Length: 329
Image (cartoon, rainbow, N blue to C red; front, side, top):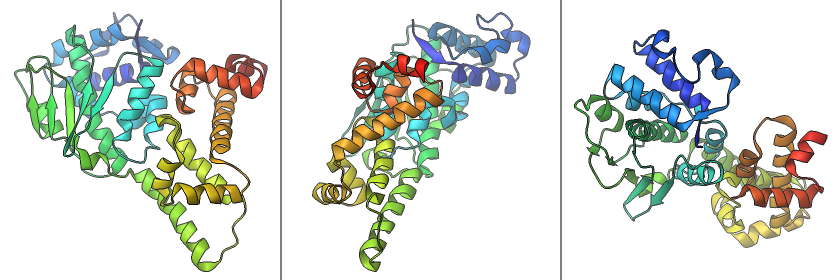
């Protein structure tokens, strides 16, 4: 059975209440409102049923409006990983990995062209609630990208496979671009160059890294042998939810060639590969001991594409499975 995060389920209910629905409108939900704090996820079909119930009461556009109210923290581990993306478009790569690893409720695929990139959502609208959830997903995409980049980045087109509602005002306000219905695909499109926009977090951390390197070179500052390794480890940690980064990829972000970065790490007595493993281990250990995150979520945050691969690696590191480690420590 597929599941949806309880935080999204609760957010939909809360926004419906702000738009005029009453608590009694939700009294016969399969998961009562007052028990939401006891669950982490709800069956997807119950989430779709909730969307359908609200749509019947409030009419067209609610899914779009609730999407506009979404915050990055509403997406849990996935949202936390978005905050460390270096470029706007990376949120889709991380979403694709996350849902492949932990759920099949969403399947994202980015189709890049020189000028326009389409972000496809492969989730068939077999019932009205799925169609509404797809609308909310694209609507939320707009506000998430703006929050991450702190710019007015905007889509250039939106396409839905389902039929058009009678009232399009909420859609036009949210997307401010061409919106097509009854199409062969669900997608939202952006200018490819705008998906390369640096996120606000990336600009701060990477600029700090570069300034320190410039000061080191120009002022003859005596840098601790481990300083470069510590800085690179932080960048690796940020990059891991997109998968294990290459030294070339990381070097591009910090303005160093892979050869220079390799040499600087070697001066600190570590290799890039060893630093990857050490960072993965430290993240995994911390999350297993100090959080309630599932093993699948921890595998995602440490760059693994399959939970079984994470389990095998962790057993090589410790001689225990992640679950055994959590129980005995």
